[in-house]
Image (cartoon, rainbow, N blue to C red; front, side):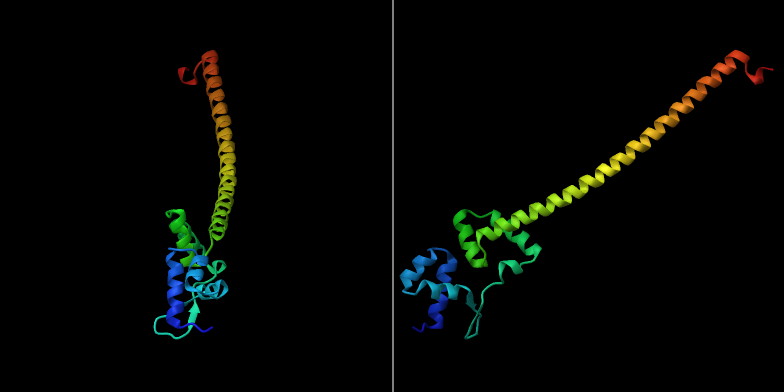
Length: 158
């Protein structure tokens, strides 16, 4: 069966607004579910007579876009999230995967920072120990000088 372009656009808009499920819209409009899913992969560009690709694939998103999507999605309720996901062409499992990727990356960065801080701490402890030894040596020499001066007298006294 052939459907008009206007009809296809209306069905896609109904699904993307999220008022009903895809299955319910397909049933209400008398469109096979597989045909409607195909239409959902594409949207109509203004002034064009052909259906064009709706959104890029989730795996094609940049890290910045993924982070922005996670921030935006975190603000939404479950129902709003479903509509938002349909509009953006992603699923909630994509969001979960991206969240895990960012947390693992952050964990790796933290591990690198911890290693660097431990190395710095070790160096500072070593320097502090060296300075403590130098101070102890200087103190011992000063005490000995005072004892020598007390026993034999100061050379300036002669």
